[in-house]
Length: 307
Image (cartoon, rainbow, N blue to C red):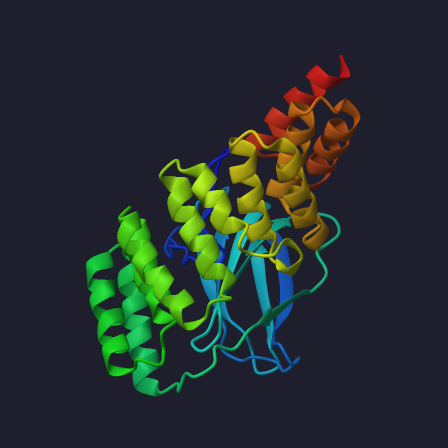
């Protein structure tokens, strides 16, 4: 599943494979932020993966003792940021970087602690090993590591997500759903697992069933812009434009610099024949991204709409 066009993006908790050798992501941009738990306490040692969508490459940093993190020398355009730390539910956001002009304000991320997990150095080492296999595309090897960890530590049922992710990447969606369901057996309210199962159905072209799973997650409880965008895109591809619009709008409300959400808002309004709102959102898009291939496409839309 790629992060381009109208194809559904991966769920919020999916790992992103990064190219650690390419330098095409370098530029003059800079962002900073903090990572806290749900009680507002800073989290040290959060692994933050930054991936430039324009360059197709990225790098990793870690949060400091006060939860602060800083990433410098970034190329302009859209970036995906994954926040991961053993014992916490992963978080993923997208931001738009400008190399010149006003910088983004500090980004505040809150991560939910996964209950019932005893974190040891051995567990951390095994998880790193499994994740390295995953990022290298060695999914069977990663499954072996995660499975052994689960057998020795049944309480860390959240690792079923990692196994499911491996099968998802291998396009074995039946197996992926089996392991996502194991999370729901332990935590019936786990929205991320429900979204992941929906993604499996969406990737198989079963959009109606995918929407059934997405609808199991209460709209007002979704606070992640990426999840909202994902759901909106499936609705859009299914021809349910008015409902897709609601999800895109919410995604941009939560994350005002969500380039993908703003673009899809413009496209959705265009499809629905609302010329003024389409122009408004496409103009907003160009204020944040004026140099990409998509920006050139947006200019084409605006030329058409203004005639």
